[in-house]
Amino acid sequence: MLALAYTFADLPGAIITTVVIGGYRLWLGGAGAMTGVSGILIAAAAGLFIGRVPNRFFKGRLLKPLALGIAASLSSISVIALPHAACRMPHAALAALSWEIILAVSAMNILGVLILHDFLSHERKSLHLFRTLERDAAVDPLTKLANRRAFDAKAASVLTPAQNPSGKYSVIMIDIDTGDGVLADIASIVSDCVRKSDVVARFGGEEIAVLLPGMDDTKAVVVAEKNRRRIEANEFAGTHANMKVTFSLGAAGANTRTTGVAHALKAADAALYAAKRNGRNRVETALAA
Image (cartoon, rainbow, N blue to C red; front, side, top):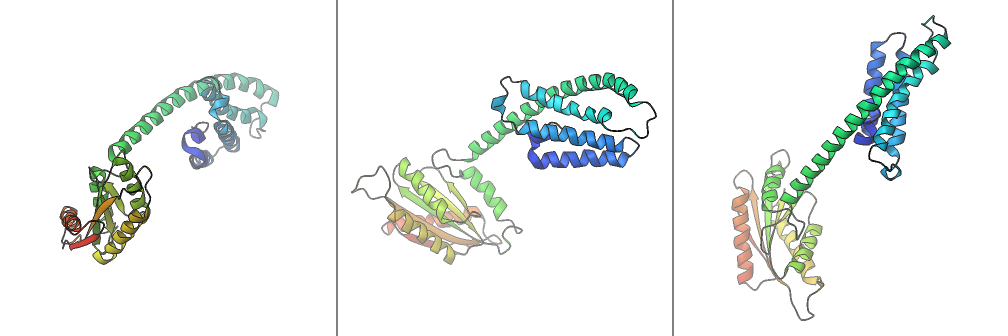
């Protein structure tokens, strides 16, 4: 674990592993405590050094774990190199005896590291694949925004009393009458116009929803107008000079104590259609409480 700590847990993990194992060895005490701690530090330092070497320098798949196994075995150096004040056996005799033990322990260390490295590598790949699939399942591939499923999950999280004590929140619905290329650009504009704590999602087709925790309808209109001006002023690549991108925005304010997100979305959607009826490229509001 000392040799592999940096490779699989980075520097903080390596430090924590070394401190825990070294501290436990000191707690056990005995005449060999300092020798044991020295061996722990040697193995950790060797694992850190090899772990920092880029993988491209190891031509074979097993070369790096083999090197880490050897690093784990370096802890045995302390058995011979350090003085043994409590041992009356002559140092030469102790060294001869120790080499037999060290060779056996080193072989077990190398084999153990190879097996554990293979297991942890497999688990890390599986975790990476799981996270990739989980992310892809929650992200719209065109706009890179959250999808409706992810929006609902994030809404439940950011609107809890702990995260949103005032209970106030607002929803903005944006409808764009344009192609996919422009929709992706508008998604980027909307994301830049809101806070990191806000939730932006694509609601299928050409609609984008924005959830604004802690913000009443008055402030939501300011955000909606900011988005409207930015979209209106933007020159979208791929559009004709005489082509006008039309869009409509609807905003609704609500309170978690009285109104659920689904109802707020309906109110914002109704305001959105009012904006369409009144000429587009405008913001209309509604109160969902």
